[in-house]
Image (cartoon, rainbow, N blue to C red; front, side, top):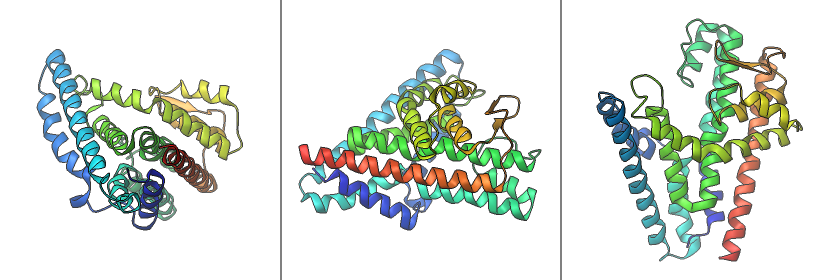
Length: 303
């Protein structure tokens, strides 16, 4: 078996040095090309057939991706552990994306200093909201919310599942999160994407709360009861936790107009708050990586 700790260290260094591979080499981009046509097909059906088809499609694809990842991991068993860690790290890296998340959120603030329109265009890359009427505060709030929520989806949860189940765990989680992003919305995909949405909720449940705990620990804010109450204001069973923790730690309001407001009595975030949120998320990200590496090292030693 490859050394899991060495694999994770190498994957983290690859992300820090290079970020995301080009789409033509990115497994998530390949997956998107498959999911798009399937989703359009499923959206044509009525509720029950769409739900059944979406559920079966999710199970089949998850099983296939997990099986391939498991077979690759077993194949690498034939190599010396320190050699096998290299190809395994290259396969693990696309399952998480910390550098890209950090850089994209930072770019929103840079664009906003030039003009509101540039800030709106940049934040549109991070969310599915209508950004045309956003003011400067809403642009910044949306960027900080995306940073907090995706700290879990793009980093903590994939690392958690890698620690629990190796490459198959990380790959299946990345698949589940990608499917939820493409099929899990209300509207045309509602029934076809209902199972994928619930599956992502289940797989993200514990990591989201770990993410909130990391943010609170790194931000020296330990009001868990308040974060739990604030998190319940959002429609998501998971996304509200890291967002509420970020709002509490930075001391700002984060909102989706007409849907929720977290830490509603606080001020709207300014440029300094955006920088503080990025610093806090970076500390939490490095802490998550360090804890994951330590957990993998324990597994390596006791194996």
